[in-house]
Image 1 (cartoon, rainbow, N blue to C red):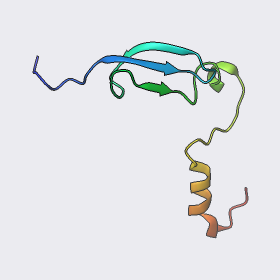
Image 2 (image 1 turned 90 degrees about the horizontal axis):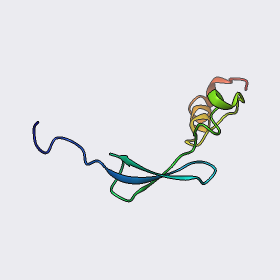
Image 3 (image 1 turned 90 degrees about the vertical axis):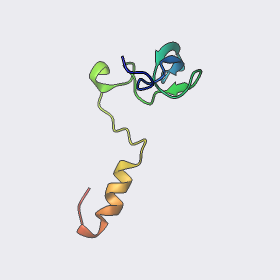
Length: 74
């Protein structure tokens, strides 16, 4: 194997939407970092059967701003 081409594989903490924490090994961030999930199997529509719109990144607002002059009915 070539040296120094592989990412560091270390322990992180993953926090689910209900506050449950898990220790995992990952290449995410640095050792000891925390990854907080917005969507996980406890709230994702694929597992719960419920449909809801999640707009954490403001994608809907960005779309409306970009195309506001086209008179699109919502």
